[in-house]
Image (cartoon, rainbow over the protein chains, first blue to last red):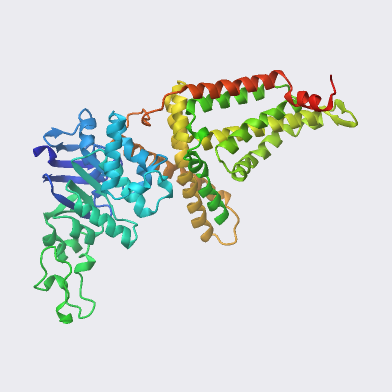
Length: 270
Length: 269
């Protein structure tokens, strides 16, 4: 399934004011991988996402989706395969009903109305909001809006999902719902976020950006347990891995922490 | 402040009304748009001091209000918002047009008649336009405009403005609130700060516009607004249009109010 591969080769990007936001960034993301993109504010996450989506073009280097190089010419075909969920759902939802918003992408690709309907209903079903189909997007709650924005991208049946802060500004219940949703998607995923606990739960691989450069790229546990690395990049260990509130033991040093097992209790509780 | 926010929330009432499923709602959007255009055009073609002949035209909005199950009060409130503007346009007529007109025992200046005529015409035109949006919805109205070969840029502009004006107002309200919290005992925004305040709003609007455009183009938007299948115009839509147009034209040619009056009182026989 090489066509689901996303590759960045030595990307550089400078803004017109001379600020170099992305420096020599290279990575390859394979089919089915879920990758967390983390970094402090201003580390270059959003710029990198925009470079991957072809909203910005690198000053040097190239982006390949499958084996196709991202250029202005290949942009329409490539964008059909990448689904991008914006940080602010209000930027993404602009039609008068949720259904019309979800159907917006497929309609633009010239699908006939029966196919559009099938796709839109499937996308609404996938995120669990078929009951909201006739509601106006502006009247939804923050969590519902976020899920509707995800559905509006899923209806295009993208190979790769790219999300910018999918859990920001959500209440705990809505956040949990989005996390569960993300865990169930089989798409290749790239999730840029400051919510490291969410990254820990949903991503197998993490790329850390620091001042526009890749500071680390590896398995999630290895990176999110690495206090020194995270602190040098302006981050900290996920809250769920921080010291036990009772005895103060640093959880990552507790021997029985297993991969993907976040439900451990501290030794002091035994 | 909460009043403003409440009324902002109600701004979308028309969208909710447009989703009802009544006989009027099921009429083709283009037909409703054309009927409204004919209505407004006929209304505008009356003499400037005509009052009684305008009365039969109340029938059309009343018909829509009742058959489309539209609540009267919210619609009237929206019409009231425009009334000061209408009064502003017509209020100088009684001052400048002092020609005397006599109705039986009542003597009025013709200025008042023209003012009343302007007032009725504008109010009816505004009511009917609001009812058009409330029974059709802005998106289907945009489709109707496209069918009339209105350039797509205008139709799109209308849709996006309608969608985002709310967000823009909300954003400016947030800014005003943040400002007033740091400027206690001060009414409004100081003239010195107004420049950067408005500039900031403009920049934010630009930013948002750019992000929305990006979100649209990432989903394959190339400039054409695709709203899905448009229903075909049926025979009953033609009948609806023809019947109303006929009524408007008859009401334009004959003063129905006077004719009915004559029927009952026998005057004019």
